[in-house]
Image 1 (cartoon, rainbow, N blue to C red):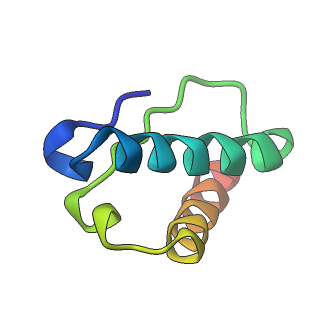
Image 2: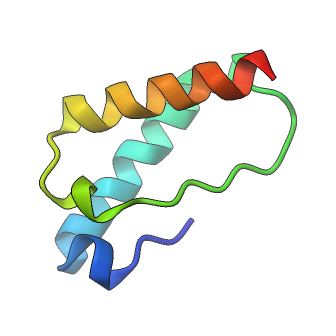
Length: 67
C-alpha cells in the first residue's frame, strides 16, 4: 500500500489514511475474494473524515465482493 505525499501531505496524514484502509480491510477480508487489491487514495481523502473514508471503502468492498 502506498499513499503519496501529493495525495495526503504530511506523514501523519498519510499514516492515518493507511491505518484506516488496513482496519477496513481487516474487518471485511472474509467477504472479499482471494486476490491482490490496490487501493489508490485520491486527493479528496486528505480532507475526508474517518467515517467518510470508511463508508467509501465499504462501498468498494461491496463492489469487489459481488464480482
